Length: 347
Ligand code: P6P
Image 1: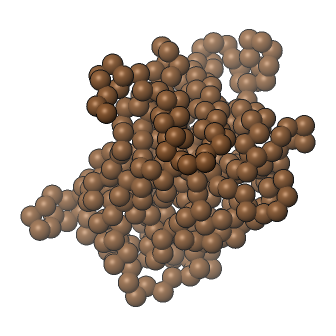
Image 2: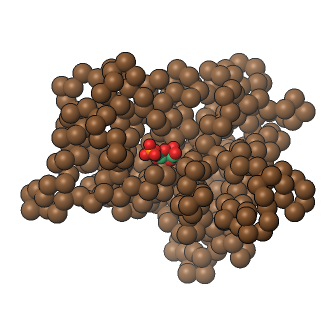
Image 3: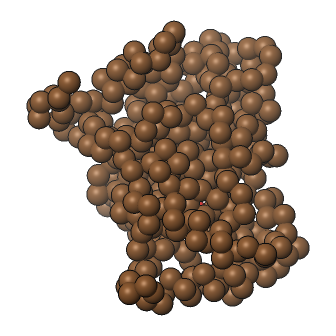
């Protein structure tokens, strides 16, 4: 059925979720209302992020606000907002947050469900003070353990077990991008009506980009093959222009740009110190959800040696090298690493 322009512009995420629910035989509606509850949390966070710069101007000292309430750091505010929006819906049996050292059980007074929510409530939050885009990232798994309460083992599932994953980028506009295995879809928040409207259906990443995203300041910490690969991007080849460096330092913003325009994001480990390779990005809260999205969009996500989504997690805050983006670019990097014996890089 061809969507009329009017129906396209009012194609809300709620309508999208209901239509997707119909396509899943035997669906109970739990996933739909879980996702709906998440969108509420993201709208609340978007409002706070977008007025963050006014904390001082409005006399909000950062200690107490006009209502006498403590003005929390935004990443703690985002964590608390997601937890409070998600703890009572009866769809989750457990949560885990990048901001919390341990698993987050559902309060005993609430009904429990079959899903687990892993989230990075506000990635790149240090960028807020300089008005750079930040983001929330989420990953949804299905409980595998016995009994009503989720357990740590339910969080430590490979990325291939994800039921859904997504991110919200709080930038010039607030945009939610998610997949439930049926392609990648982008919804832009219309603050005038408080609705996420479908703006980017069936997103696909170009198979090769012309942009690379990496913190060049870490150059001396990379292994030689990575140094050689990055150098090769700076040289024109096959008559093509050199790649451009675009690095915002906010994972969701860098990933989102590359998803739309093509390119490769790299956060290798520090191989110059084999005893302390120090990867930075987290497997459960960053690498796996973005890997699900990029693969559904036709791209790839790797440590440089193995597919991110096939890694068996060993701890909640495990860190991992992340090479993610256009498939041809990720493959070119993996090829450049052939023969490099690197230490076990996940911590
Ligand atoms: P660096 C932000 O602090 C973050 O976790 C990601 O959003 C971002 O990609 C990365 O760290 C930037 O790290 O070492 O380049 O500042």
